[in-house]
Length: 175
Image (cartoon, rainbow, N blue to C red; front, side):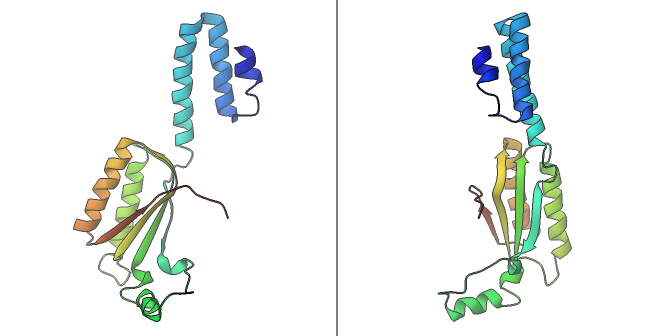
């Protein structure tokens, strides 16, 4: 087990995960397999907690759609007029890009940041008609975060009068 756990896995895990493997091995040698199972659970929970709080701020960026690249090629002139319209076009689309793990420890910060941003824009020319929540940089989410996102969607509709909210997910690809 030592060869498989410690020697063969060298270089395949980051330092925190690899130290967890050594911790389990030492506990197994000193106290037996049952204690090693408990050490494994403790190591897994600790590793998850540390890796989950790597990005304390779950909001990566808040921007308007005017800052994004858009393909005008093959787009009818009527569609371009709508996109460029001052009161209904891209300037009224707010994009909120999220990152890291969303969990009970940082979801309150996320919802507060989004509410404050929407409150600042409410009643101004920048009040968004559409909000896009971009989850492409999110690595994981627990149930409390998903419930908070569902509540946030309801708040966006009721309080801030945002009729359309779009949730984008998927893997992030470089390039």
